[in-house]
Image (cartoon, rainbow, N blue to C red; front, side):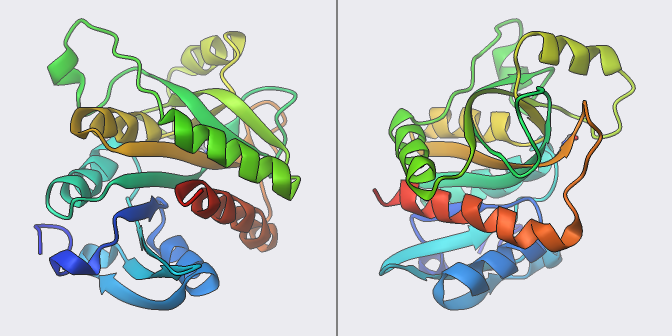
Length: 234
Ligand code: HPA
């Protein structure tokens, strides 16, 4: 048990998928894992462990934003020895060629700040995913026929942004989408020599202002979960 995770040490698998939303953790575990069981309910941040094609997998909610993700990822890595951490989340599309429901594999993350900014001070550290996971996820997405983009994303500190100029600069520089968690996950994985990747589904769009209808979300998010699971074990 840790401060924020009530699971026993061996209740957490070496491979952890991390959606922001705890109810999406429940849905993904019940949909894709065999014999899922709830291993965390502290603060309602649900976590489940089961197996996928015989491999043990934990799906643990991270909450929204990098400070929240940092708490769960730190405890998963340092106390539960998680080795592979894959964010499965949603993002806002930032380019014309990126559409609602497309999948984005985050090859780099740009930020204004992260919970680790205090360490790096005036350095601009470049948080990146594990290349093997990235390549495996891309191959899995290609095999499924999912429209997939690989490139830079923006990990923002705010959803309600009072600085629209930042989003404009991101779009101008080819950033594919905006979310709020991946950069800190990549930084923690680098610090502790673990594997990390963010697999994102475009749920809304900053240019077209479309948003994924609620009834479409499950099917679209399902592709992302399967891509993450295949990448983890390929
Ligand atoms: N902004 C920030 N985070 C997000 C968005 C967004 O538009 N969509 C999904 N996560």
